[in-house]
Length: 363
Image (tube, rainbow, N blue to C red; front, top):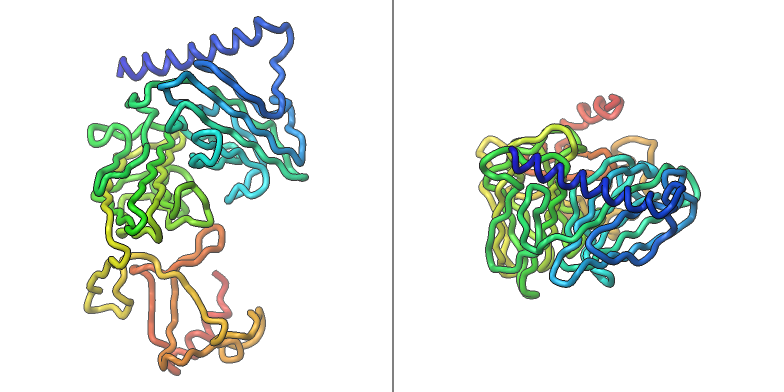
């Protein structure tokens, strides 16, 4: 505990010295401009005009370079951008490196992530704003750290061995700390895919995993369009298979409640490898270990989606001989998935009356 307190105090003193240095150079409040190049052991970055409202329709890029042989560490002290669940309007992107680097995260609203660590001595921040709602922007501090420093705030990294393990900070001795962001970038040979399994899992529970959570993405960056899943609670997620030879696993904790954390394992598999499990004998759901993407064929279903009419008038039949009813889960962004624990039933004419009743009920 003393070492943790000492580390936190050192960070606070570092920020205080930085602010004092800036104020000593000017009798006025520090002025933050749109983008720039920053070099050195440490420094402060603020959105244009901070703490005033940032301007609309702007794109600002800051490039950070710390001394060779070290990694860049970025911590947000304040964040207030237009809120959106997918950060589609106003947002800050953080990248490892200056050109074609891995994206470490996209942030908006008022949620401050934990420390972000680059893989080398360079890091890039990019802030984009649209024409509408704005806020006070952001204030962040960057510093240089040793590449293999393993303090409470630093975790993640590149994993390229055929198999390995990843854990939350402090595992298994005590709870993971608050305010942490960890990103593991797993890279397999081009002719292989990646399988990920969680052995033990305990992350702050929330129906929509809005607070502490683990997200897994196909590819080499954190991209919501390639998100495989978002997980929290105390039940290990089902095994995950990548589509290609790269995966990103991101763990994020907020500044409040914490939990035991997790230990996960990965291994490389040949591309044709698939996971199958035997379903319980009392259920009719198909044998699978990951959510089933709902897809349709244009040739089988040419009519446009309608909001009115009956089940029969809007039903699109296939030529497989059997039709099915799927009842899955829709998240807060309206994306639907059907997993092993959800309801799947072969459609029969006797179900028609029950469906007619259900369609008139409000969720």
